[in-house]
Length: 279
Image (cartoon, rainbow, N blue to C red):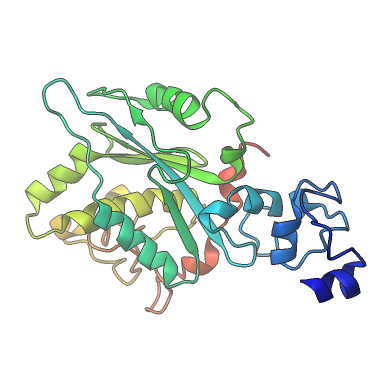
């Protein structure tokens, strides 16, 4: 605005100001929008006012996808396995994405799932039995695109949906995890009252939670696995999809409002943990 140029910056309002006059790698428009002086250099690579481990430079790089330097953002890139030669299909329902996004919205956290809108989302070649070594190769080829310094590594978690793995969901890097579509479909076959959107959304959000370094996680061990089968209900008050007792039935983390052993997951998210291997 004319007054801002004259009074605040001492620039000529009849001359267009654009580009990066202070050489801090952030253009005039972004700096002015978010309250920074575009004519005074700032160390944006080390500024993170909302403490979501996405620095201001990365906030600028993701600004076209509505990132906000003053409101926590969580970015996740999804890749999915392509169809198989005998009609095998890997699913992830759109409704599951909406359930996860709603859970984050309630906490005033912006959840961005890249299913092709943000430069990610590849169809990975079909493999009917994939292992950890294969997952590593997919991560390097389809997420990093063979560039170990790919800037997206410092912004995006990587949630891969595959067709089959013996363990149908686990974290395989500090910022990467998989869920297997056949495992989700098996749950639906064995428990027909379950909802497909909730099953997929709960599993995807559960594995994402591991990239937030939740610890401890009540009800997350072999003794408490699938308590609706075993009758083991001890940790049900911990009402979180991180708890096996609520997994596939809830798309949310706990807010800590129930009795012990409930824990407030939302307040203990470690936004920096997904970058550990870079540190």
